[in-house]
Amino acid sequence: MAAKNVLLFICFMLCSIYVNCDILCEQGFCKEHLNGDNACSTPAPECDMNNATHSGLWLPSPTICNCCSFCLPLYKLGQPCSLGGSGNGITIGRCGDGLTCDNSTRTCIRMKTKCHDAQDDYDARHARGETGAFENRPSCDEKGKFTSFHCVPSQTCFCQSEEGERLFGEVEYTGLFMNMPCRCSQMAYKIQTLIAKDLPYPVFGMRCTADGNFNPVQCIDNRCYCVNTITGERIAGPSVDLNTTHISELPCYDEKLDLFPKTADSEPPYEYTMPCFDTVQERKDLIVKSIEEGFNVEYFSTFGSISCLPDGTFGRMSINSNGSKICVDERGEKLGNYEAPANTPQFNDMDCKCAHSTNVMTLSNEPPRCCKNGNFRPIQCHSGKCRCVDSDGRQVGRESSDVTRLTCYTQDWRNC
Image (cartoon, rainbow, N blue to C red; front, side, top):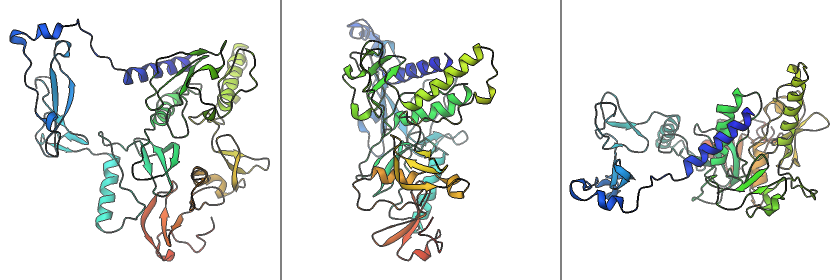
């Protein structure tokens, strides 16, 4: 019940964020109210300029029924600013994106964040000529956090957290103007890191698709409805009750996104779930029943062995009959010959990130090179030049036509 309540709360908050909540006033109120001494003051000019030196943000005015236009100026780096607070009067402006008001100088300064530090490191190395052709300058949002995704040119783009950690969600890189909102993936990450760890049973948010967006079909218990795939906001229209109606009757249902369609369902009640979710529910039901019957269930009451990805699948690694780890796709099918025997370093370090990037790049003529366990080979080569990469496949440092000059070079660099 606690998990269900948390999920309902999350969905409520999500809808609250993405649904407009304008104050409703009687028709014609503003026209009558603004007569006489209540005329609107002239808004700050910055919002009409929005150029390199002057910019602002249009907001609902802090007046009755938001009758007037209101522009909040955004100050530039080094400009005077106010910290606000009691006794300081009405805020007339704030520091722009990525800036904050310094407590001592009362001027706008750059925020101190992990993403800004990464940008500074890149800029310093770039000035010294130490950055590579496939190495991108980190992108930060208006709060100084990492943006929702990162791209490796000629390879893939993947979702990332505000701290720059790689998350679920990956697509093939197709050019400069890539965009991955990744809101579902980021929401799932926050649920697991901020909420789920303190609850006795696993909690799952809204179901995601392979690109980190929201699955168009979302369900709470047996009631399913359609949502906007980018924002997760519910779309006006019919919903279905799985107790009486098959999920295919929902207009937004796409069988291509249903990794495990319940084709055998010929009579209600119907299902729209995933094997990983089912396994968690079965374990939870068993624990609850055992507790009710007075059994001590400590020895099997954890869910550490069950980890569901945001799309409802078990994960991208599995154990075969020999006890070796293998890389698998979203349907649990083995990918290539990637395998690592038990009790080996390759087994312990296995992440299959390269194997899955290669699987995403099915039409590419030059996919990344992977280790035998599906990890990225530390040295990747392209068009006659080689480069060092990290565990996510991101270039580190300059490339070279002489592989022995790379900092990650070893004599056995081809085999890993």
